[in-house]
Image (tube, rainbow, N blue to C red; front, side):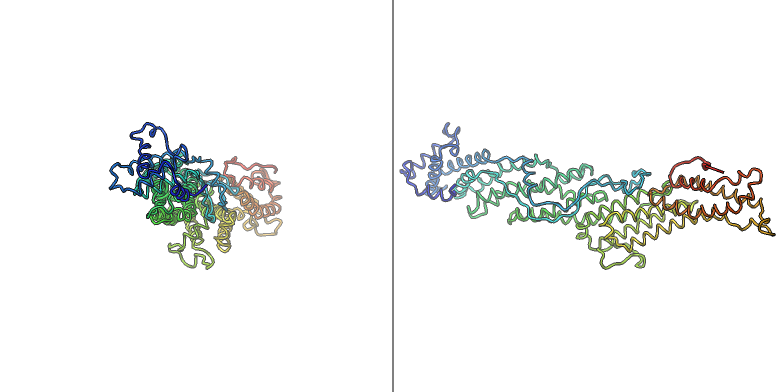
Length: 614
């Protein structure tokens, strides 16, 4: 189609019989289309009819405008013509605009080169994995409770604008022809108002279809966080569509209609008239999140929002590139900065919460404490956002920590130092909680073993977290839980093995005849009592990790069974000939081996060990 300006020039050069009379004929034609006096003019639209009539009317407007001014127009022809063109302008915008549904917009968005390198899924920082059984209700740890989260890691952003034709090209030509004449006649403001009122309704309809609600900052902050999470997911999708498709396409329409018309940038003025309110409404939601109360459960959604907005800002700068739209660009940048600050603040509060948590009820059986599960699953999620957080976290932890205790590495990021510091704070907290097992040192050691082993397994299970933490600190943690396992065995089994020593059984005289049966009976009796107590109590203790549980049983068996077998072999014959020997030699080696299978199962077993043989 011929450009509108060329067509207008051609029309001005063309001789027309209808306008041969010059100003009088032009005046007559304009009056004929005055809708205030003509029924036909009220019922018909010029631009819906014969194209020659359209051309004649536009030429008549040009003739009137050249011949008279608004101050010397006694018949009001210019005002009548402008009112008519305003109606025609509005009618074309309302009838010729394309309505694009959400599905079509989503298809457009999906066709962009925005493939993400992230992984997304449902995570539960109180959830179970790695072979650990869930003995504890995570609701017990109310201070740091978190529900299921969606997580995604940072992706690279590319310019992803996809403009679509919201108004057909032939309608654009007509709109430009009208706008050219209205602006030349001094009716720029009226033209902008008409354009904005019509197009704003289209943008508002798109917002409603995308599920963007008109919520003030206060409205958002009064919502429950679970509701806000769902709205954040919808907002990220809607914001991409709005900025990259809707707003970008609205700017394109404005530029095609108004580019080069008038001394002012009419296109930019119309664009801002159309989308400024919608843009403010869109960004108010993100702003409300950025200044909301900070708490650990909000971190990952705030990071999702931060990443989405960070990806969008280059496109926001492109779409809102004019001076009059600077406020939108500034708002977007300020919100991104506040989201970054919120993320840093939440991470700091999380670390402080780990230090301050002071629950005084020991977990039954020395199992994994809810705070350990929570903190390590939380840290795992942090590692999924490490690319973003490594940009946001630039300073090391400020908490006072002896340099000798804190592992130092120039290669580690500030974020890695924060992760290590958090684990150290957790470990210190666990050491305090282990003292809650006041009457049982063995259970205290078992508790530390279980929890530190859980920490190690969580680090090993995440390549990203392991890379951040580093093998040196991981080895240190491994040494802690192994030492705790050794301390547990000493606290329990040294006492049991002490019953199997030879000292105190022999009396003076030859070896064969120097065994005191009474001392031997007392020794077997003590052994039975101590082992039965250990069996009764430690069967209710818990080692959730299957492999660790088996390794601990094997280690105990390697110490206990050979010692018992040797003791039994040396002294059994001295009691078997006596009456009621079964009261003392109650268990075979196989009985003990079988009994060890009950240990650390966190269940109540019969008070007496099952005996398979005498």
